[in-house]
Image (cartoon, rainbow, N blue to C red):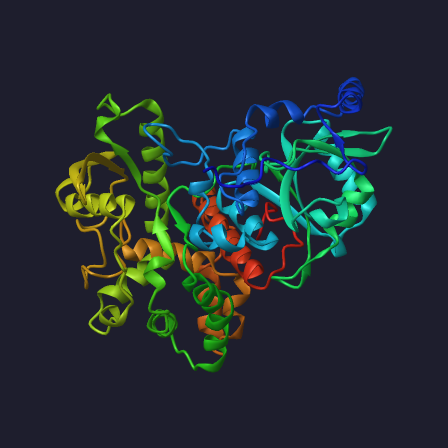
Length: 480
């Protein structure tokens, strides 16, 4: 006997107008003629239905990212790099999203972590007129898109909080086209812009804050080349707080005499799960993907990584970090270790670590190996930039430290450079203050390294904002 179920809903009309209705088609044609449907074509090319009842935010974001042709930098299935809901897990576990959905702030974090430029506004941080201007701006262009976070109740629809992209705008009727990603429930539909604004003003009970909208576009530069921050588990909250707030307080309260004191204070107080927070961006490919020779694209990426790594190692701060980690008084033995997980990227990256000593000094080297995970085996090639330092993939004092590649002194140097400039202002010793401020000055860094450091700083700032549930800033704007 067949089980009862739901097959779609009747779209409440008014206030909405079904996109496929006679009136909806008329609005569509008129909007095309007025030039306010330019963003529609790319969005509709990648329109998707959310795969889970609570995945509206993830479906909206993956649809927009694909329409902007932002490369996720990692494979989806087979050889294909493609954004899918299953890949948007860096700010909230998918199992949790499947049950409770995702908040406005966390979706903003996801968009930024995925490599997009994001401008986010809650309704109490904007106005209806500003919203109209932003919708118009993205409707006459195909290089930015709007995702709206609204409450269905205002539109007389069943359900509550929901995310969907806006596919176009009709100037004469002041109506927005909502490309509802819950296509199993409601079709795309036109709604009065003022009513959508009202729907975005409803409070999200899970956060106690109003909903809003976000503008998503391609960044003017590529995301990080060598390092990235991970927020796959709740540990990032404490680590972000430590780096953005606690380090500054520690330095204010301590009487540091030299740079070694500063490094010792910071490194010995690192949270125990710090190793899960910052990662080396590895170039991993399955050997069964086909051609074994490096493509020009792969060679170029490795060469750029090589140059960034070289620039890190040429900084004065790197020399201090390396000397500290190698000293007899080094705190390496007390530094937090990386908790290796049995997933493909982590295991594959370890292949690089094991082969680094053999191939150190060879530009654009690759290490081949076989990854066995359960019943499956994968031949892998891991491409990595060569280090000009002594062979080895980790801190020279402790081969177990952090486990990030190419080396922990590289990683720690980059992260120290990424700390906000005001971090050092509380140091009482004037000589030490001047020295560390000079060593950590980003303005004098080479362009590639400066962009890498600013990318990390931007990520730190974003995580702090997400932690505070404040997303009222242009997250793609440059940070000094």
